Length: 96
Image (cartoon, rainbow, N blue to C red; front, top):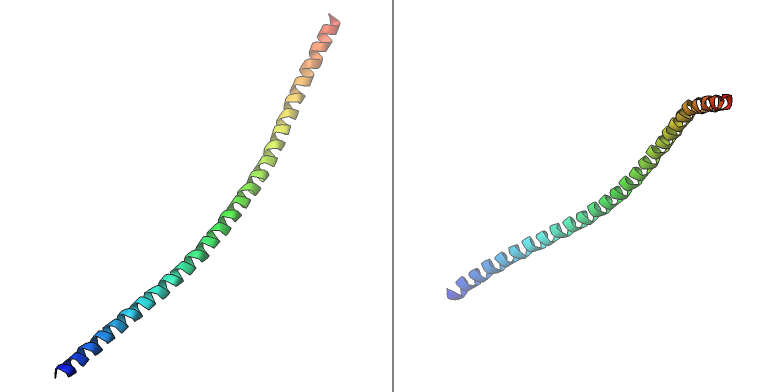
């Protein structure tokens, strides 16, 4: 009877070990899938960051162009306002 009880205990132990190994293998497979997914997400994040930087640079250059045009318009308006004043002063000086 003791041999039979030992073989039952041994079978139960082997079954338990087999279950633990299967659980470990499943956990390792999940960890590998998670690592793969993490690598994919990190690559996508890097790609999106590069795209965002490109779009920000593009938006910055587009914003700079109208600002330059606005400055040029302001300079023209200022020149238009000052030239008559200067010519009036020149006429007054010439008359004196």
